[in-house]
Amino acid sequence: MMDTSQENRVRQIRRILVLILFLNWGVAIAKIVYGFLTNFNSMLADGLHSLSDGVSNILGLMGITLACQPADKDHPYGHKKYETFFSLLIGVFLIIVALNLFIKGIQHLRNPVIPRIDALSFIIMLITTSVNVGVMLYEYRKGKALQSDILISDSLHTKADIFTSFSVIAALAAIKLGYPIFDPMVTIVISLFIAHAAFSIIKESSNVLCDMAVIMDNKKIAAIVRSIKGVKTCHRIRTRGRPDDIHVDLHVHVSPEMHIDKAHAISSRIEEAIKRVIPGVSDVVVHIEPAK
Image (cartoon, rainbow, N blue to C red; front, side, top):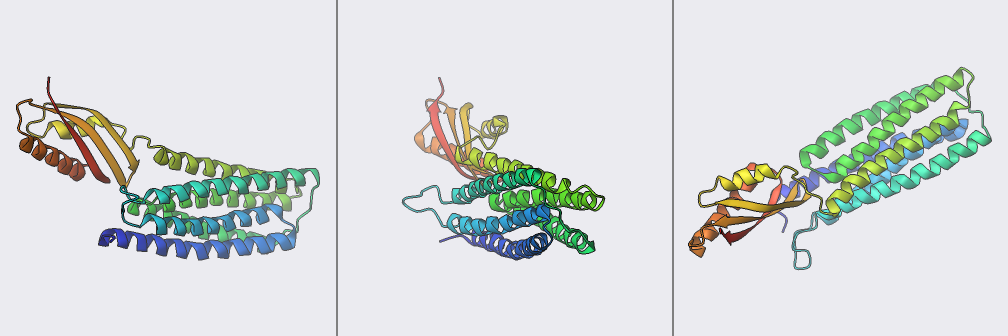
């Protein structure tokens, strides 16, 4: 069974993702429909980017549903990396979107299409950009508070969407001044923003899946361990996992004459101390060795 705090965390993440899903789809529909009607390709591209935000939310919901399952016989370390894995899928999906938009931008550079720009174009972009800013700030803040890879990576996606929306607004002004070439150019810029966000997400997710060290400063852990009475020294400190699910293992030297019961008690105190001082640590494995 899932503990109450974890169940509450999952419920909050799901609620946030569903809310943001509807907001992203509303923004996407407005941009796509008006971009299509006016032949304004950079707005259409921005709308597709917003639509991809919605797909990211769906992937996030799938990931958090799998990740919330408790540890079992086949998965003794739990299922939390499913959340990270689905974050990686979001990154891959964004690369596909970026590539398609880049190709479309190049095609329209070679065969320009003159878009129809009016006041409604500016109004739609300003309203949808404001919604995206609010979504990004809210989702990132909640992702940090809940230590959710899905929410953080999805907020980075939305952050890229904000930059691209500003690019579209700039393109609107340039086209209105008589420079339609800015439309395909901004489409290409949008694709590069999306690609940058994608590689950032993939890098962070890969670090977790490839067991990169979570705590880079082992001196902090060593200081905690050495503060425990009976410990002579410690070495071979390793960490892995996610920020909210850190696994630590280390080797500790104690007196060769120490009875096993006392050595076990020291091991338990080390585990308790590390979990108390360092947030996110869920498992500590202590290897007791006789000091030479």
